[in-house]
Each structure stands twice: as structure tokens, then as C-alpha cells.
Length: 356
Image (cartoon, rainbow, N blue to C red; front, side, top):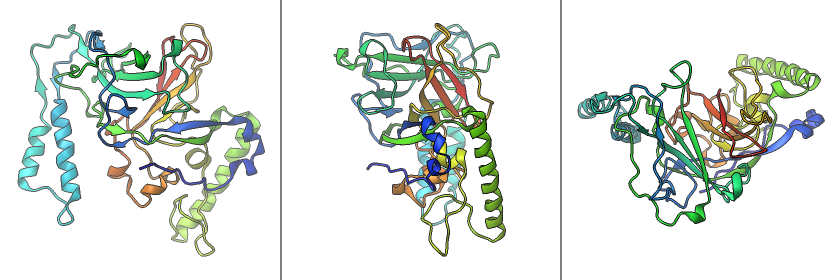
């Protein structure tokens, strides 16, 4: 079933015509649980990986002998989903509680040395045919495959993530690896994605407010402040504080917010503009040629939340954020989003990323 983004609460270009110069498009991936195949764009699904090509591994020395088993993480999710589906008494039975306790145990694999290569987890694969806003790959490549290390143990701090992005020409893969390696244990549950099919949808998007021209940004800030005052008045009057849903004479549409309702949609998406809502914007230039990089892909911990509910697809109206807005079970940072950037001059140059 397709997913459809509702119309925006207001026409923001009618308020700020200058925004037309800062409009773009982004493709919302709308990952939802399913059974994707190697020929499908997916999150957490099987990858079109050549049988004769080595699987990507992490070679940075770090402890990866202690953590949770991926199979236990997925089984825990299944048990929790079963409990939630019960109409009566949503709590766990004694048997389920004991099972969950066992599944949450951490294990040690003595044979895994800190210097041993560690198989990366295949997070997603994206075919350019499915995603109109996915930036072009190098040398005619049409398939982007995303991997990461299941431990936060990299970089100067020793607590950073490790990403590995691979472009390839899908037509050149003749024999597919059917049993790719998996790490025995992982350091973080949120690095284990659930298999999801995609329902791509191209929508309009506008540049992050902090990167707009100063005068325009200041006017939008003033407008947002007025909207916040109106929102507080609604709360005092006992009306719901949600920017979605149809407006009527008896129930006028609640105030909107540029960041949460009008500029950048939440969830997994390809292309468009990056949000900088945690850190101030900073230059994201190519480490090889210094060209300003473009947003390639956003990996988000949720598809919508209380602040971004106006982006909730029409087909899923009325569903609560938990668990319906977390289909991939991927968590980035502290429930944030990962923005991955690519060089527009040479897509083969190394990627950069920011966690917001």
C-alpha cells in the first residue's frame, strides 16, 4: 500500500514568497515491515551482493566480543509485538517476562579479538530507479548499499559510528551471496534493522531555517514565535495541540511551525535538505575536493513523533507514534537522525555525515 503525505497545514510560499528560491524535493522512503528481495530497494532486507566479492568488514581495532545476539534482539521484538496485539491485559505473562529477560542477556565471544575483522551489518539498499531524489552514483552505478559497524567504538573519541557506503551497477551482479556473514554480537540494539519494504513518495521541502538568508530567516522566526503564542492560547483553552487534521469552523487548524510542519519531513528520505536542529549548521565540504556536499540520505529513528505529526501519512492517521512510527527499529544516536552527504562533483569521493 502506498503512503501519502497530507497537504501542509498552510501554503508557506503564500506567506513568504522568497521561499520559492529555497524549495526542493525529497523522496520519503516510508519503510514498513515486509519481505523484500535482493531486487528491491529496502531497509534491513537481503542485499544484491556478488557471491565472489568479500563482505564489508570493520578493521578498526576495538572490543567486539561482548554484546547482544542479533537473533535475540529480533526475537525480543517479536515477543513485544505479540504482547501489544492482545486486546485484553496488554502486560506480559510470567512466561513472556522470563523469556524477555533471557533474550536481553549479553554474551561474550572469547574467540573475537579486538584486531579481528568484524562483519558489517547491511542497513539498506536503494535502487536509483525507485528514488527520484537519490543523487547520482559514480560511473553509471544505479544501486547504493549502506553498511555500518554494530559498535560505537570509532574515531578520535573512541565512541563514534562507522559507516561504509558502496555504489554498484546492479546489472553486473550475476550470482548473489545468499548467506552473508553477521556479527555474533552487537553493541547496540538500534543497529539491527528489521526487514522493511519501501513506499517512495516525492514531496516538496524547504531549506533549514538557519541556512536561509538572514532577513528571511528572521521573519520566519518572528512568525514562528507568533504561532507559538497562538498554540499556547489553544492549550489554555483546552484544544489539542496538533498541526494535522482537517480544519473546520468549529475546530480551526492549530498553528503550524516552520521546522516541524513546513520545511523538512521526518523519517527516512533521499535527497533534499538536511536538518540541523541539534547542532548549529556547519560546513559540510568534500574532504577530497572541498566542494559543498549535498544530502544523499537521511536515516531516522522514527517516521513521525508528537512534534512532526502533521507528516503522518493519510493511510496511517490515528495511529500512535509507538510502535507504528518505528518500523525499522533503527535508532540513531539519542533517538535522532543520521544525515549522510555526498560530493556532487565526484560521487565516488568519501562521504561525510552528521547526527542530529
